[in-house]
Amino acid sequence: AELMFIGEGPGRDEDLQGRPFVGAAGQLLTKMINAMQFEREDVYIANVVKCRPPNNRNPEDPEAQACLPYLRRQIELIKPKVLVLLGAVPLLHLLGKKGITRLHGEWSEYMGIKTLPTFHPAYLLRDPSKKRETWEDMKIVRDYLNGLK
Ligand code: URA
Image 1: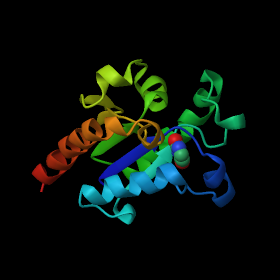
Image 2: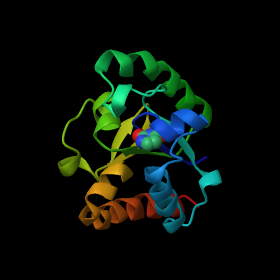
Image 3: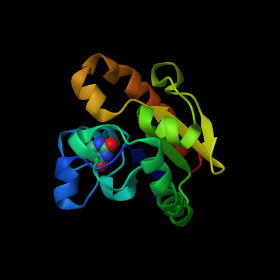
Image 4: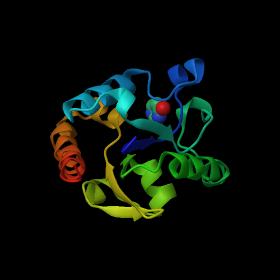
């Protein structure tokens, strides 16, 4: 996959099915992927933590640190051209940065791979007014990937 999305961690539906982003947030993520003219099968979807934190709380730093080697290996194997970070949790644990509202849509690098943070789809479900900015971010990624062809 040229494009890899990194979320936070499995929620209830994901925990039950053992697959990332299969619940309500996942349906919105699929729509975003399709709007970029990709299919879900074309992209790789992973999470910072691999187990569901109790009551869907944010993963704590030691939990993220425990899972990061696994995520890094996934990135090494997939070798995507672009990483999209979904929300504040991957922004914090991969790039060590806070402030998704300020930093979304700005290119960065992780493991030598171009990396762009945007809002988490679950956040968009709570605040649909952020969908427009998220789509602008996704167009940056789409245009970059199309430019490589
Ligand atoms: N939210 C996430 O961050 N990851 C999932 O896999 C599902 C919901």
